Length: 345
Length: 255
Image (tube, rainbow over the protein chains, first blue to last red):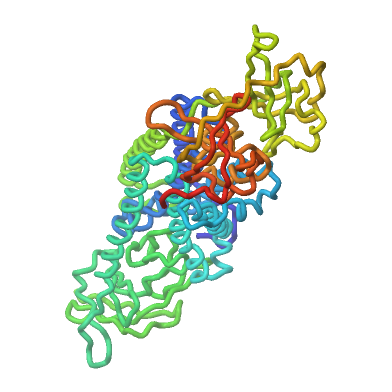
C-alpha cells in the first residue's frame, strides 16, 4: 500500500521475485538457443531469436495464467501472485522482441511497407494457409501492450478497479488469439506430435485449473437459506470461524467476509478495493483485515484503511446470538462504522 | 512478519513460505529446462543450407536473363567447347530479384560481379551487388551452356517456395510460418521454385515458368507455402530444372 506513486516500491521480496523471473527467462533463452545451435547449426540467427523469444513468451503466459487459479485453490501460491504484473510486463517485452524479429525478418526489405505487409502479404484463402495467424499475434500483442502499459497502480486508481479489471481480463482473449497464432502458424510446419502434445497439455492445464477454481468458488457462492423475521441471514456459528480469520458467505448475491478477532465479529464486503481480491481469505494482521493478494488493509469495524490510506469497502451489521452469527444483508456505504458483535463467553 | 500468511510488502516472508517457494522455484526450473530441451530438439524444418552473409566474392561468367537471371560460370579445368558450367541464380539484395531492364544490354554477355554465395544441396545462388555487374571481355570465352533437354510432361506435387530464402538466406525458409516472407520475395522478383520432397532421395527443385517460358511471380502468390499439384513440361536448361505450366492450372492439394 502507498499514498504516493512510485515506479516500483522495491523491497527484498520484490527483488527476489524479479531476480527469479529474469533469471528463469534468461535460462530458458540460453537453454533453447544452445540446444538449437548445437543440433541445428545452420539455423539463421534471426529465426533462432524469433523462436526462442516466441516460445519463452508463450510459456510465461501459461505460467501467469496458472498463478490466478492456483492461488484460489491454495494460499501457498499467493507469493507468486503478489508481483504477477512484473511477469506480465516481462511477457510483453518477450512478445515484442518476437514480433520485431518477425516484422524485420519476414516483412522488411521488400516492396511493401513492413507494417502494411503484415496485413496484405499473406492473402486469405480457403485453406489452412489462408488463416491470418500473424494478425492473431498482432492483436494479442496489442492487448499485452495495453495491459503492460496500465499495469501500475496509478492506472488502477485512475481507470477505477472495474474498468482496470475488465481491461486486464482481456489476457484471456490474448491467450485465445495466441493459441490460434501458434496452431495456424508454427504448428503447421513443426509437426512433431510432441509440439502438439505440449500445446495441448498447456491448454488443458490452464483450462483445468480455472475449472477447478471456479468449482470451488461456486460452492462458496451458495446462498444462505436461514432468514430471520427481520430479514437478517444466519451465517453459521462463531465456532466455524478461526481466530483472526474469516468465513465467506453469500448474502443477497454478494460475498461477505465475516471476521472473528479478539472476542468480536465484524463483516465487510469480500471484495478488496484494490484489485477485487478476496478479503475473506485474508487475515487480521496488526488489527487490520489484510488482503491475501497485495496486502491492502482495512479496519474491520469501519471497512476503511487506516490513515493515511484512503481505500474503503462496505461494511455489514452483524450480531451473535447463542453462538450463531447473523448478518444484515443490506450493506452500509463503504467506510461506514458497523459496531462489532461481541461474542458471549 | 506473519509466519503463515504471506504479505508481499513485508521485508521478509515467513520461513515456511520461503521454504515452499524454494521448492517451487526449483521445480519450475526443472520444468522450464525440460521444455526448452523438447521444444528446441523437436524442430525438424531446419535444413542444411548456407548464406555466406558478409562475405563478398568475385564471379565471372555468362549472364542470362531468361527465364530468370542466372550466371553460367565455367568450371575450373574445363575449356573450349567441352567446358562444363555451374549455374548460379542471380538475385539482388533483400527481397528483390535482379532488374532485367537494367541489365538487358548484358544479356548473353560475359560479365563480372561481386556477390554473396547462397547454396543448398546442388542449388547455388548469388546475391549480387547490382552496381558491381560489368561486361567482362569476349563473349566467346565462356560457353553458352548445355542444350535444352526435354524431360516430358509430368505431374508433380510440392510447395512453392521463394528460392532465395529456401536456398539459404533463411533457415527454415519454407512452410506456413514463412509464407508472408516468401510472398514478399516472389512478389519482389525472386524466382519461385517448386520444392518436391521425395520419400527416398533428396528434394528436387523446379523453376516455375509459364507455358511460354515467362516468369510467373505475380500469378503464384496465392499458392505459396502450401501443397500444390502442377502438371507441365519439364526441361533441363542451363543446369536448371524448369517446369513450364500455366499458373491457372495449378491446383491446391487437400486442406
